[in-house]
Image 1 (cartoon, helix red, strand yellow):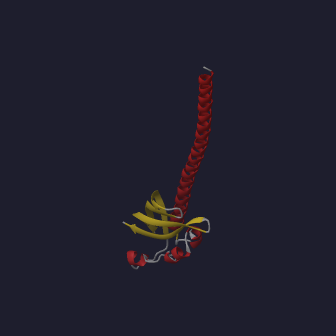
Image 2 (cartoon, rainbow, N blue to C red; image 1 turned 180 degrees about the vertical axis):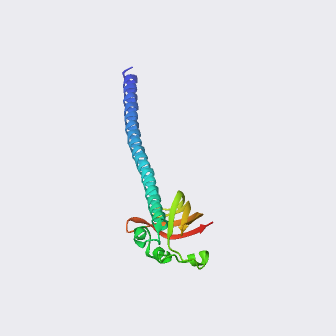
Image 3 (spheres, helix red, strand yellow; image 1 turned 90 degrees about the vertical axis):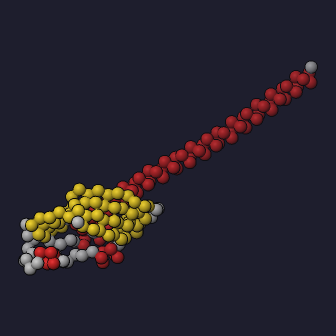
Amino acid sequence: MQKKLIVVIVLLIGTMLFFIFQNSSLKNENLTLMEQNKQLKSEDVNEADTNEQVKDVANDFINGYFNYQDKPAKQEVESYATNEVLKQLQFDDAEGLEEVYGDTDIKKVQSSVENLSLFEGQSLDDRVELVALFDNQIEVNDLSSVAMTIMTLEMIVEEDQWKVTNFTFTQQ
C-alpha cells in the first residue's frame, strides 16, 4: 500500500511540475505575441503617419505650383520637389499662353486649385505613388476657364523628407 501511495505522490508531483513548466512556457509565448502585436500596431500607425505626410507634401506642392498670380513661384515648391522636378517646371511669365490667346496683350494671369483630391497608389518604404484630381481655375485678362487636372506624383524620401521625384499631368 505504501508503494502505491508513493507512486501516486510521485505521479502527482510530476504532473504538477509538468503543468507549472507548461504554464511558464505559455506565459512566455503570450508575452512574445503581445510584443509582436504592439509592434504591428505601431507599424500601422507609422504607415498611416507616413501616408498623411506624403499627402501633405503632395498637397503643398500642387497648391504651391498651381496657385499663383502672374507666374508660378519657384520658392513655393522647391522644398517639396527634387532638383530634377524643379528643372521640369515652368516659372516664366505666361509661357505658352500666346498660343492659346493669340496676339492678345496678356496683362493678368491668375491660377488656383479647387476640389483637390489625393489617392494613394503603390507604395514601398521609401517610395509612394499618388494620383491627384483637381480643378485648375485659370483667369487671363478677366477671361476665366476651368481645366480638370489629373496628376500622377511619384514621391521619395530625400534627406529625411518626402519630395516629388517625378510627375505627369493632363488638363482637359
